[in-house]
Length: 154
Image 1: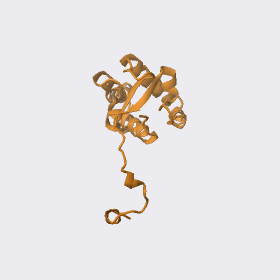
Image 2 (image 1 turned 180 degrees about the horizontal axis):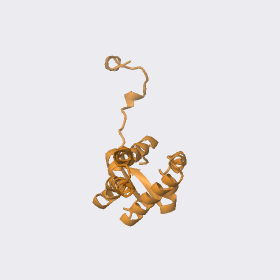
Image 3 (image 1 turned 30 degrees about the vertical axis):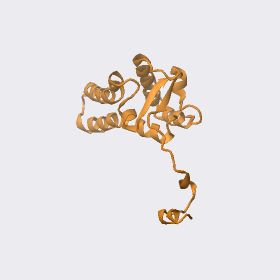
Image 4 (image 1 turned 90 degrees about the vertical axis):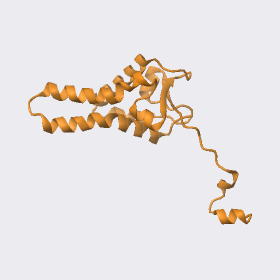
């Protein structure tokens, strides 16, 4: 099943939030130690966005929360090396373009047949939703019908 746009945005936000929080803290916390700032932000980013790929194949911290997995186009598990390159490519372009790549990539997201962004096309991957779809009752398609009216046959 194809994950919704909102799930991918929430997963990306959860992945990148740790690095953003670390960036805010080190910006105001350390005056002249630029190497320490870079080190702390890099560790925060790697611990939330890179290292989880070694633990659970195809899922970062945010993707695990949203029950999304990155797989190859054929549906098989993607190689960890490809997943890490994909993540580094996405982050590098986002930083180099001051976030413009992220906006363009999410608006270029296709939800019809496969959930793929620009970096998914480059690395031949796609996102899948691990949640099973909830089947609706046949009676749920009537708008405005309450439980008491359904009991009466209306």
